[in-house]
Image 1 (cartoon, one colour):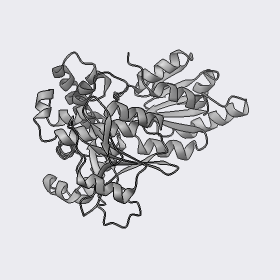
Image 2 (cartoon, rainbow, N blue to C red):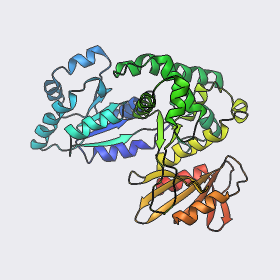
Image 3 (cartoon, rainbow, N blue to C red):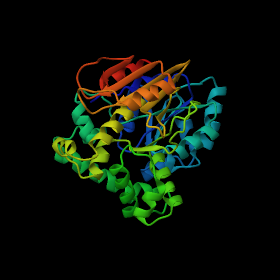
Image 4 (cartoon, rainbow, N blue to C red):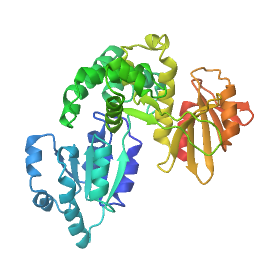
Length: 385
């Protein structure tokens, strides 16, 4: 059992809100985390994918009335789109009775639509937490984490072959069952091809026209496919940093398959040797670093990448507020050197701190205010920000 960093956060947020929505992709560990919280709280649990549990919620108010003094955990809440309206009246009634906090913990796998429903219907009553796959500060095997990704079943598999088998099955299940259950009528093989194309272009700027030609689809349709994978928390769309720097900027987003293990599975990469010899190795490492750092930063932080037509570039820019701006370059090398483009980006951005995240075991200064830093150390700084 690996302790999740989010455990204490969810406990704290539950103590300050009537309801908490815990989002994250399927199989990331939401149910395990919720049950750990619920076991210590004598909570009642219902999985809305099970017909028997969904039937219990046909009359939400009556069901909640039976458990008026307990934390209620509802899993896969996107299965009941009208649930939030009913919960609002339950929450308000309990508030009038003097119980304001720790009423509901709601788990869901689809992000945008779920957040829209909860925020619109339960405004002022709900907070949101997102559970990511395992991060480097939750494990002590960074290279295995990079290869296999952070989904618990994949990371903890007995060997690399079984890990890859699990990830391939995960991809197939999403395409054949989960996506159709959300409504979109997208051929599974077409969506797999698109997802795989994104993996091949890991960390590249999104070119809808090029991808559309490869799939024989329209640019609008390709954009809709990207929206879906972003909504399912499977792909990250990193926006360009559009600060007022008076430069001609690249304005297309960069796109990453969020979990490195899923990226590798889509490309048929099952071992470290195969990964190190694959053309995607640099983009894969960049995406792995970005997921870990962005996942550790506080919610108030806004992130993007910076690139100008003149060659200035920072792989990640993080605005932490209060005038604190970080510029980050990502290098797979264990002996990193700062690129001219990064120095140029720093001249434009004038960040308060400048980092080069590398694959080595030590952090050290590189001169001109740039810090070479290991990924675990960078994540620790992000957590403390």
